[in-house]
Amino acid sequence: MSDTIQYLILAEDLFDGLMDGTKCSTIRKGKRDVSLGPLVFLNNKEPGGGGYVVEVTDVEYKVHQDITDEDAQKDGFESTRDLFDKLREFYPDIDEKSIVTIIHFET
Image (cartoon, rainbow, N blue to C red; front, side, top):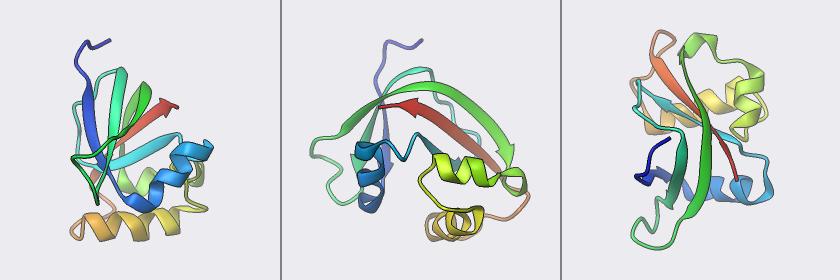
């Protein structure tokens, strides 16, 4: 467990899922160095203001093509198709062979 608070930017439209508990993970392109422990999500529209604190409980790495509907649903999406569309907004160069980091957390 880390004593340092970690920060990630999160799209403003995904904060509702954090608050109502339907979002309990986030998927990011690349192999991210994330530690278990506190993590603060900052709003991408107001990165300097406030934040939402969660507790990282697990970090896993997968190849993009191996993401499941269950992974997508834990990230607040109905299916991998919906998730992939959102990931392409942030990572236009992501493809099925890209490595992703899945960060699981409790609110």
